Image (cartoon, rainbow, N blue to C red; front, side):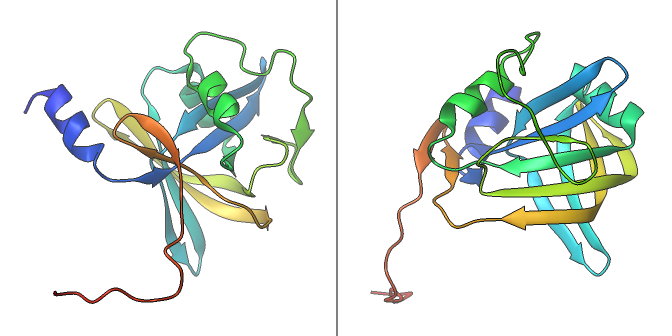
Length: 165
């Protein structure tokens, strides 16, 4: 399977956009992700997939915890900033911290703070299973990602379309 083919195919699946952040001995780290899922309500667990070899991935492994900021439709510039490799993603940004001293994106739709439960190598990524220790959320429209582009989510109203025509 060619990586470009799989990327294109999986790009047909619309996802939300989030920023995973942590803090380690050398300061705050973060990266944009769209591979995020809720795993369990009891115990409360989520899973994030981070690129092997990235500074943020190593910082999450070293710190033992991370936060996920789920972005709103007005936060595309934040998503782009944290998607660039090799930059100081926090330069010039006012830092806000969650309850557990992990940096979070201000004005995100939600923050989920986690303690790392498991770290699983998976090809060119590392999966982090995090136990949720704190959350907060607010109303708003999410930022979505589809086919290599950001987009807004538009509701269809309350009518349920028929399965077959």
